[in-house]
Amino acid sequence: MNKKKRGLVFVLSAPAGTGKTTLARMLAKEFPSLVLSVSSTTRPSRSFEQEGRDYHFLSREEFEKQILAGEFLEYAEVFGNYYGTSKKSLEKMRSSGKHVLLVIDTQGALQLKERIDAVYIFIAPPNFQELQRRLEARESESGEEIQKRLSWAHQEMAEIDQYDYLIVNDTLDNAYAVLRSILIAEEHRVYAKTH
Ligand code: ADP
Ligand code: 5GP
Image (cartoon, rainbow, N blue to C red; front, side, top):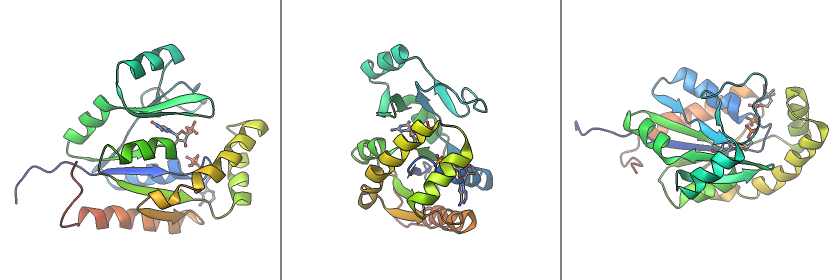
């Protein structure tokens, strides 16, 4: 009964603009037992982002060096930039006993499915029109960038069957209520996912 427990790993994917970052932050705020994984990326930082909090911002050269050194548990190229999860930093977070939440794209999630036992959650927008509206309202990408994200969204939605749970982010309150209930239910599994 007093065996030292490792935290669970939750993997959250959703087309850009759906609201996954918003939901992930809400969860981490309510549950101090959960930490957000910080990915590495070659994308330039947005004005409000902080190194080490939102991402580790790397040059393409440095990222490729780390790929060759086998430092990523998964990585993918998304919208022309690399994104990846460092093996070392995930292990460090897991060994703290906390749950870890990874917010990554479908390509990365599919790589992880072959490597670690985790709870895979897909967040879908209520429809593509609303997805476009959210992307435009966020004002972090140009019109051309938004079109790229919308067209990639269709391909990401085709991977829903690979996930354990699907949440439609219609209203934030509804989506968050489901997300927090998944965390609570997974914490109460008799045979918890442990590796
Ligand atoms: P993602 O991380 O999936 O790209 P964000 O969390 O940045 O998406 O959310 C995109 C935009 O949509 C943000 O401006 C956010 O405030 C807004 N948003 C998130 N969820 C909802 C919702 N349920 N209804 C309306 N707007 C939302
Ligand atoms: P953004 O540039 O909007 O922050 O993220 C773009 C996409 O990259 C999102 O789908 C996001 O989930 C994904 N992403 C962020 N970090 C990682 C990561 O470490 N690995 C993978 N595979 N995708 C990531």
